[in-house]
Structure formats: C-alpha cells, structure tokens
Image (tube, rainbow, N blue to C red; front, side, top):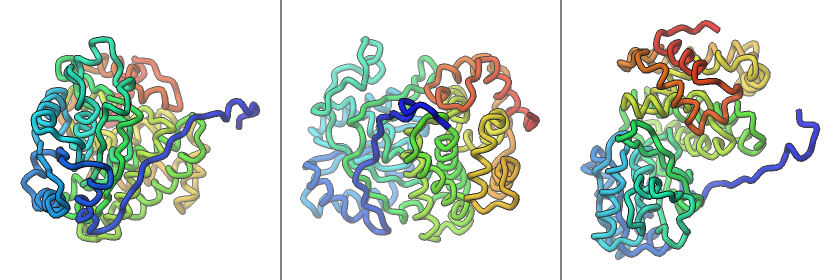
Length: 393
C-alpha cells in the first residue's frame, strides 16, 4: 500500500467511441461519412477477404455513397513488407482513411498502414532513419475505423501495432497516440464462424491481457477494475463461446472481454507477453496460443509477489477456497477444458534458442510490467520449463 501520495500519480487514456451489437456492421458506410472518409481502404487478411462479411462491408459503403478499396496481403503475424505494400495500395488508390477489419493481424497491419500512409520511408526504414513513429503528427494519420472479427487481441482499442521485423527476427511495436481508431464497430455476429481452437486461443489471449494488467505493479486503479471484470467474463463465457459457437450472448461477452483486456493493459503486461513476442517472431506461432500455454508457468514464477492479489481475484470469481492455489487450479482446468496444450513442445518449439529467447524477453517492453524483474537467464529458464512442461516452482 503506497504511503506517499506521489506514488499515485499517473497519465491515463481510455478508448474511443464504440458501436457494439449484433448486426451493426451495416452501419459502416454511414460511419465512414461521419469521420470524413470518402474513399477508405479496407485492410484485412486473405482468409477473410473472400468471405461474405467483407462483401457486406463494401456494400454498406456503396449504399452510403462511399468508395472502398481492398487490401488483404497480410500474414498471420504481419511483417514489415505487408505494411509497406498496404501503404503503396493506399497511395495508389487515393484513399483517405483506413477500415481495419479482422483479428489482431488485420487490425494491427491496418493501423500501421494508416500511421505510414503519408510517409516516404518504409515502416522499419522510418525507424532506422532515426525517427520515431510516435512523432508522426496527427494531421498525417488518416482516420481509422476498426471492426474486430476475433475476441482476443483487443487491437481495436489500442494505440499500437505489433509488426514482425523479418530481417532481425523480432516483433516491433509501432506506437502513436493518434492511431487509436476513431470508431470501433463491435459486431459479435462476425465471430460466429470462428473455429473452436481459434476461439479458445484468442479468448485465452484476452484472459492474458486482463490477467497481466491485474498483476502489474503499476498504479492504475481504473484499469485494475476493468481487468478483474474482464477476467470474470472470460471465466463465465469462453467455454460456451468455444463449444457453442453460435451463442451470440457468449460471443458478445467475449468480444467485450477482449476490448476490456486491451483497455486494461495500459497498466502494463508481463512475462507472458515478454516471452510470447519473441517466440512469435522466431517460430511464427499463434500469439494467443503462446500466451495460453505460458500462463501457468509465469504465474508460478511470480507467485511470491502476486499470491495476495490472486486470492482477492479468486474470491471475486467465486472460486472455492479463494487463494492463489485455487486460481492456478482454475487456469489449468480451463486450459484442459479448451484443449490447450500443456507445453510449448506441442507447437514444435524446443530449447535450442533459450539463451536468445531470454535476451529478447528482457528487451521486450512487456517485461517492464512483470511483477518481478527477471534477468535474461531467468527468462531462459522460465522458457525451458514451458517447453518441457515443468510446473514446479
């Protein structure tokens, strides 16, 4: 408990306008006009590009008298070239805004396209030239409308994108306060067709965001309050959303839990993400699945610092005998229920690069929010436990 009022100082931001509810995709065209778009570029991934929801989105624009281009050449873990190619299409088409449509990959890439839309350098060339994406003025970033199709990353309410630098095998965070979408259209019906495993993995990603924000040592009581309710929503609704995919109540609650997680992690993330980011860059593995597998290993490593707060959390969740142990037991149980692998070897990840993973984890910005400061060697050992399935303290 802080004894000095100066420890309670902070700079806080909250998300943007959200239009939430089943069927609200049909409002896209009119929303484009409201934010000043006459000819936006819709950026999505190739898997979504051929689906009816994209045709519906473009038809909504057409009905509103809004032109709409399409760019979908994006990898599951978007890379710099995807962003650069999107910027080229944006400029060639004379576009004046970006519709970020998809899961975390599509939305992250789209937001990065918007940030770079009026720049002359490539996305990583800009950084290598001694610049910082944060310094790009708001007047050079076109408006963004975000439409999530998964319930995990919460990128629709974020001011950053995670883009893989393939040359250096590292994930970079493209950040600018003004890349927050002007409007989010949250239509849970768009998540109904997600496969069970993607629903489970993205849902566990939402849990990791809320949970690491809740465990962060940084002061942000509003984010802490959002995180604890986001965790409850995951507990109550993720299994139903996974196994009863057409249940729109569960899909709605999980979409909200996802946005809540990305709102809450203004308070910080931690060891799960510090490891997941380099592993995603090195092994091209699914981010949500990485966090789901890493979760109990990081909780065990942080136990000495987070035991009391997880006891409070477990009481809020209604777990029997509220304690750190009851919470960890629940995490292991929901992973098993959702058929999440117990260790990273299930993703064809071995320990050969453990030293590199440890160094990259310390350098990742998320490491600053871990409740315990860990060295590269400690991250390497933590990673090795997650590969081999060693849940010992």
